[in-house]
Image (cartoon, rainbow, N blue to C red; front, side, top):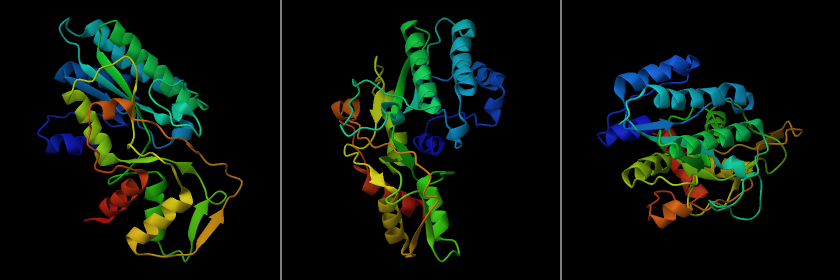
Amino acid sequence: NLQIHLMSQNHQVCSIWRDGLKNLQTSNDTITKYQPDVIVHLAADPYVKSVNIDSHFPLTLSILNWIKQNALPTYRPIFIYASSATLFGNCDIPKNETNRVNPSSIYSVCKLSCEHLVELFTKSKVIRGVSIRAVANVGKHSTHGILHDFVRKLQSDSPTFKLIGKEPGTIKPFIHVRDACRIIEFIVDKHIIQDRPINVAPPDTRPLSALEVANITMSELGITKPIEWVDETWEGDDNRLEIVPDTLMKHDFKWLYPDSISAIKGAVKDMISV
């Protein structure tokens, strides 16, 4: 999605996919060849339950160390690291960018460790870096996630709509991937390099339950099925939180989808469009 968006805005883009990153040297060779002005480390893995600090942390460290040790003295790229709002943990009080984090999984600990790497290498003047803490992305070209799963289930031949867990299911906020991509471009254009990570979310980040997302998806698809709750022992991966996008609001970013509901509606329409 980011590549498509940036190319539509006439930016030159070089992408390294997950398979290429199995060899740490691949990323370094690519940086050597192209010397990009901006490096966006999306740190994306659809199998987040398998993510561990032994695999993700060295990749980020390898990229930053290579820039430090091998790049020309004049080469100091903008480096944007895709962290996660899950660092805040579950909470009922809106979290702004100055609030303390409360990581509760290997995944979030890994993200926090990489944030510190970006901060360290920025202070050492190796990069001009900033981390972004995004809520769950939804939109076209998704390969996994709750909405991708829901659309697939509703378009299947199954007579029921199976949802995992106990009603109302997992609860989390969402941002449309189109806004997420625009925000990354906005950070670069406005040169927003700061000491603290940037919250990436709509201005209204009231979280939605799986049941709410299911009903919105059925409405947008025009498909209605009886909901069947299965595997009620599953505790879910809730992000019961609201985060305040302080920096984006300060710089007057204009959202296309200002809340989780509009993000879900827009994403479903995009996912089924030809």
